Image (cartoon, rainbow, N blue to C red):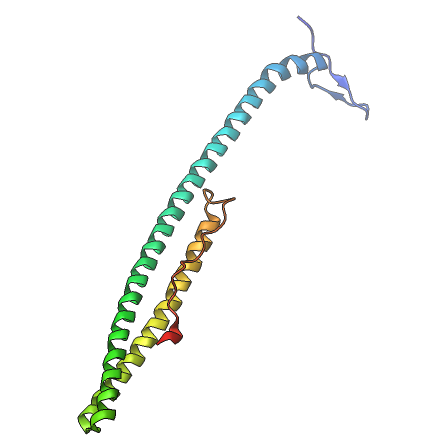
Length: 168
């Protein structure tokens, strides 16, 4: 057994700290335990971070699915509006033709104005729906660019079939 002798400090006072040999022996066993505890803590933090990222990825995937579903719904609504618009345009063309062939009646003029206003309202709704679809597409692109599963892959190209608002 060794006797602990106080070390002399530079200022001349004495210290009761352990000797370098005692510190080395204690440091090996205590330092190793501290290091293991530190590593276990870091591993736990890493696992928590991975779990958090997995949860974030699931939330992003759900949000992308929701936005894609909304986009499909809007596309269907837009397609329906376009078909109704085409039918109204055909009816207007028939009325105009009948007016030019047989003369105008006030009932025909009124019906023609009503149909034209319906067409304008549908065109407004179609344009509004197109803007919303574009907005949803931009949101999907943003969500996909943030998703860790999509990193490195190029963003999806926009749908090829777009309806030309000037066609009607």
